[in-house]
Image 1 (spheres, rainbow, N blue to C red):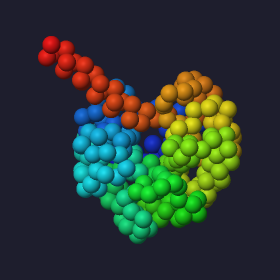
Image 2: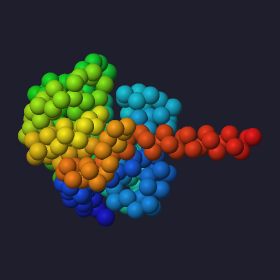
Image 3: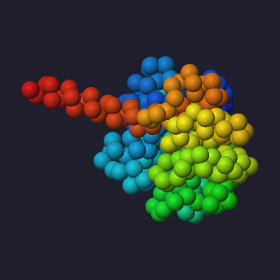
Length: 252
């Protein structure tokens, strides 16, 4: 399957009310297992990729090692690969565009892209984040790839804000991000069904929810109109706990 075909297929998998379920990978081996289980696409978790290499989340893993990891995933499997690219490893629009071009050259057809300031505090103003998304879209267009930019807002994760009070801002950000070229909206940290429904009703982008404590079950998320469900770092954490338990049993 060509990269362009993979990109088109990945975008088509985002169906409102029939969500794409992504059990996130962290290396080529985990991606191969997830694909063998029937997953139509692979998405990485930045936390898991970093931890698997002995780094902390938050762009601590060197970009060269990150690229090597996603390159091995993309070359190992024949399904679309989306990479969790955090903040793109740069404040510069030109460097951000270059970094994304590198990922496209490695076979990646989409990214998660955060609006939090990874090496700082808080979130980028929506206009600034929109300009960053536009730079990514322009870079992808130059490569001729229908790149899936999953615009992540961290309004509901780690900001200490009342989720109900942040919904209107999330919708405003989604509108700005969509106008700049975003393909989807990712709202990790939001678990309230009614608030998730309000966002879905208020935006045009397909909405991605992350599995965590308190998130409604899959059938309820589907009924709300969710288009994508991600497991984030959970698969890695579960695999490592299982490995530790089995090692303890083997040593006892």
